[in-house]
Image (cartoon, rainbow over all chains, first blue to last red; front, side):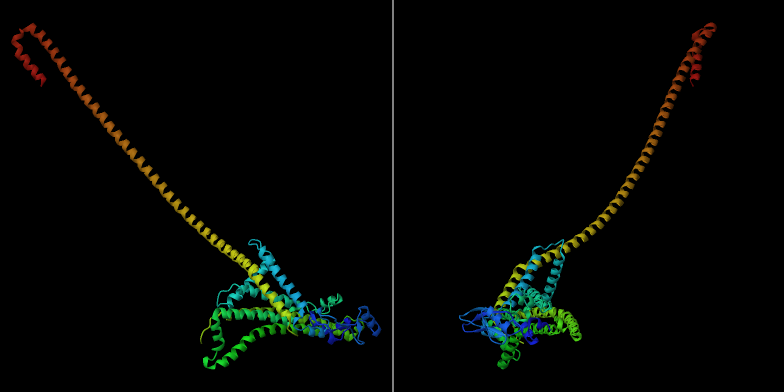
Length: 332
Length: 158
């Protein structure tokens, strides 16, 4: 199995791949553990001593921190000790990289836009702008707001690019990174709930902002309290409308996260069938390898659909929510 | 899976990206595309207009040609008329001139005839007189036969 090349069980391989690279504060007295490399007790102990650490007699080298500080988390206990202020470096890095790539390409195209001699890239970008513009014009009709279309474009392309990272073979980036000393690496930012929740929350804040702006504060309160049953059922209205309100960012965040996380998980499970361990290349081993490669291909092709679809859905719902936010309150 | 500071970081990143796209990516692209659309529309309109202009010009030229033909015909007709008139006039003039010349010649002739008659008359009378004088001088005295001479002269005159 793929996991064995890094000396882990399949269970550990999965957990390793589903853990973000976290950078955060650790308190003094916290005990850090590092995976001890080696085939037997003595080499493991030597490995730990080479790093000036204690060996726990089983799998890990140990270190007890003497003062507070910011560290890269090495395992689950580190992550838990970091709490809220742990930062997912990998998510931040890849998302900003991809968002920057998107903006760089589009901004450059905008700068070198040629009316008479368009490049193929420019034509593609024009097509995309037209597409987004069409969607926004068809959906967002409640008011005029120049922010909506560029936001839809940003969401669509950013999420799309981040989702596309899911099609990169699961070990292609994390494995070399681990050899370089990076303990964890998740390359698909959209499989991190933090990212999808951040997008959804930002959209939700804009939703509240524009709701209150277009309906007025009183109008907004009215829209969640006098609806859908009329004033005599105010508590029920409030209950329903608040759930409806909260469901918006929640569904937005969880849909994207769930789809991509599940997709990534399936890639990992399929990857578990594939091995480069020569000792395992028996008849069944080869069969399993072939099956794994085939399944991986099929899932990747199917996943292309999910990748685009989820990006589109996120963008579309954002535009729909923005349209709802801009609607004036009407007593039904 | 736990929510942590990444959430805040991502919200900031998202905000910046949207802001950047809003300010520096979307407007120039859309403006450029609108400009292109306008240009195409203008081009189509222009070509349509010029096609129409060509048609108009063709029609105009046809009209002008027809008019020119008409004018030429008119001029030619006029010229024909004019020449006919001139020929007619000169014919008339010539006839008149001929009549006039012939008339004057005739009257001249008549006058000549009268003159000749007169001269002849005079010559004849004097020659007759001299002849008579010679006869009378020979035969009788002049005074006895004066009446008879006068009488015969009157008869001659008649």
